[in-house]
Image (cartoon, rainbow, N blue to C red; front, side):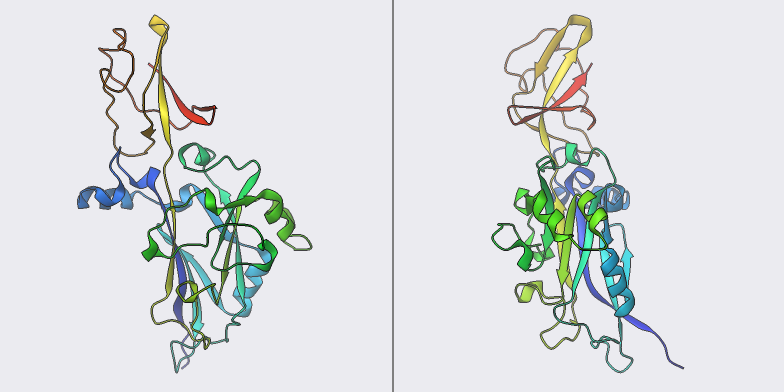
Length: 285
């Protein structure tokens, strides 16, 4: 009796410091119990969506690939030969490119993520340099061992990505998306390859890493009862978990007796304004 076997082809780990940090303590520096607790509550699909284009959905059927999601990863599996688990059941073309659209699920994603507002730019994540984007500077998608955070170096002009979808069945969806993810079987270098040079599957599949940093803002406190406002003298991190302690005698430049006896709540991500390229969280107490 024939059995169907699948092997992991590659995966993309998606982390976000806003969801995984605790107050001003980074995820990697947390106590193990706290780190595991934050991870159990975490699911990257709560804030962002990464979905295959129509063309790539056809590739998944043609090459018998499977797409799975976990709370940390997007994972692609390949059906393998019964005789050799490193051989794809249907040989994978070395220039095969899998395309995925990136969209927000959380409308406040840009508020708490360290990213330029995506009005004139879009996200491009790729393990190779596509011909369509020649002449445009952008960083290639990191692998997990690089420990590189997402930055504005992964953003390119909006029109460059929109034009990528001209004459494509995914044109409408592509032009509405926030970004594009491209994975080619042969990456720009050996570390970024998904398959071996001879087309076989890697014994240790490539793990890419998309690690968003949380935004830090100046915290602007308003006390309506006394018509008083005060802004922190340094940027403070926005996090879903934990608490950032604010001290009236050190976190503000000017002493303010009206604020000295108050407790300072941490801000929500809904109220943010931009002035002179600075981000301010508005908090009413």
